[in-house]
Each structure stands twice: as C-alpha cells, then as structure tokens.
Amino acid sequence: MMRHDCSQGSLPEFADLLTGYRIAVNELDGTELLKMYEEAGFLYKQKRDMLGSNLDLVQSNWDRALRSRDDLFTVVACSDDRGAWAAITLWRAAEHTYAMTSLVSNGKNPYVTRAAVVAGYRRLWDAGGQFRSSWFRPEHPVAADFARRVAEDHDNSTVVTLDYCPYQPGGEAVSAEIDIDIDIVPLSGTLTDDQLSLVATTRGPLFAAAGQLTGPDAWWEELNRVWGRCGLLRYQVPLAAYARGRLVGIALCQRGAFGINPSLLENKCDLLLDHTGDPAVLRKAAATLLHRVREVYQDFPDVPIPVMSDPNTTHILNGLGLHHTRKYAEIITTRAGLRHACQSVCDSYSDREQQRRGGVRT
Image 1 (cartoon, helix red, strand yellow):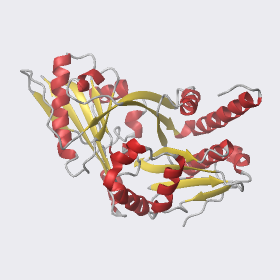
Image 2 (spheres, one colour):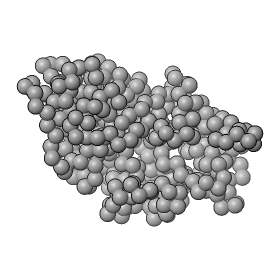
Image 3 (cartoon, one colour):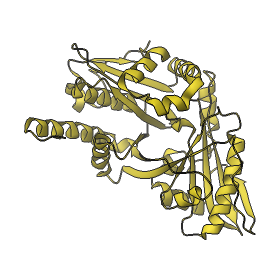
Image 4 (cartoon, helix red, strand yellow):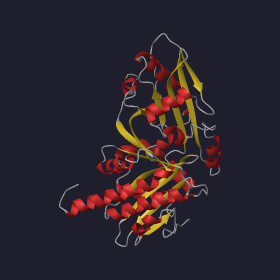
C-alpha cells in the first residue's frame, strides 16, 4: 500500500507537529477502517441503523476506492507509541475538490488527532486539491471552533449552515396543489448568471466553483470516468425549476459510491430555493423537483437521501413531509486558504491545551 514521507511536502512549516508520530496513508482496508469507526463511536446506533444491511457494500466500496491510483479515497492514520491513534479520510468530491471528513480518534492523545489533521492537509496539498470541503455538526464545540477560525480568512473560506431533511425516494411522491406549471430543466455546461446567483445566495460564494458548476462539465462526466476505473461512480445531475419563466429553485443531485462517507454525503441532494419567492410557488417547485430527484436516485439503496436545505426554506420542505432532523455546516476552503486553515487547527489545539493547564474546563 502507499506510504507517505511526512518529513517532505509542500507545507514544511507544520512538519514539526508530525515528529514522533507514525503516519500511515492507505494502509488500512475496509474491514480495519470499519473497526476503527466502531471503536471511536463514529458508527453510533442511528448511523449503523441507517446503513443497515449495506455495510458489506460500504466496505467493498472503500476497498475499491483505496486501491485506485487516482486519489479517489485516502485514509490518513496517525499513532504514537502509547496506543493513541486518530484517522481522517479524504475523497475526491469533484474534479479539483476533496472532501476531508470523518475525523475519528480513540481519545487518548489530542496531539495525535492534531497530527492526523495536519497530515491530512499535507496530503490534500500534495494531491493538488484546489478546494477542500468539510462537514461538521455545529453543536460540536471543537469542530465549531475550527470553523470559526477558518472562516476568519473570508477571502478563501466560507461556512454555510444547512438543515438535513431526509427524503425516502421509495415512499409516496410529495405533492403541492397550486394552479401553476413548474418547468424542470436539466442543466449542462456553464450555468447562467441567474442560476449562479441563486447558488451563491443559498450556498456561499465558493460553492459553485468547488462543485465545478462554473465550468462546462456540470454533470461531472470526466470525474465519473475516473471513478469508473475502479468500478465505482461519481456524477452530478443539476436540475433547475422555473415558474412562468422565472428561476425558483435548483436541485443538485450528487451520486457517488454508497457509503464513501458514512453519513452518505457523497449522495447528498442540495435543494436550493429562492426564499424571496411566493411560498405556494416554492412548495410546488420543491415537490416537482423532488419528483425528478426520485428518478436520479431510483437505484439507491433503501435509505433516505440526504437532502440539504437552506434554513430559510426548510419550512417549505417540512410542509411537504420532509422533516428537518439535524443541522450540518459545510466549510469550503480554497487552496490559497489551506495554510490558514491548518494553522487554525493548530491554534485551536494550543489554546485549549493552555486553558486545560490553567484549570479552565473546555
């Protein structure tokens, strides 16, 4: 398996933070990664129940992606000589964007966790990633502190809070009665100015670029070919909804190898609605978009699709029977912001250690 020499790299200012730890890259297989997640409590009951009988499929997809030579899926693990360990995963979410997620540890040494994150950033940098996307629960104090510090570099980072509204595609089709036609248009190529404006308003200024929506391959056909080399898939289906010629919503349906992210974010559907529009029209637009979304996910395992909604329009989905169950926050960082992001992680650890030594409970 591939190894990584952490004494070399493009972020040398952080090399001392890795001294004394063993850094392993892609030395785990799917079975070992699952055991690590279980030991860390990352596969809690709700998540395990959601994955259900599909865990074998998840492990198989991990193994296939780990064997790829295209930097599709990477597990960076760090350990010390006292039994502490931590790991973080990276997966290729778009042509030049890597999702950096699923940070876990056995809790024995916070500096091992810090080293794993730093090693993950170095790996991301060396892979040539132009954007980094990370997800976290806003109520998690450590992750929220990281995000606050990273977002201070507002030219190169954005943080957006979203509501997770699970949608069961195999259930009853949602509907909204209103006497107006909604036209659904599949998008291909570069998005129009009004489409890009709606994306930026609901998901922040970096979302379109990180999701490759500003280029000619909005469906990720080339990325899908790359994932296909190891027998997996990764593509996006963007759909726009118009009412009387006016753009009122967009659904960005992402399809990926099931369980690459155990929260299924590789298959998330971003539902973007113009919250300034007529609520009745938005309900009809959301219902019509979700009907088309069912077609995109028709071969999806029998688990809910992670639909992500702007908090300003979550009430529209609630009225259609999609109930908000939790909040997520997404951080998107450009390559130019990776050094600041990595430094923010280090500063957060240093501050919390100083508080601990001073008797302040964190």
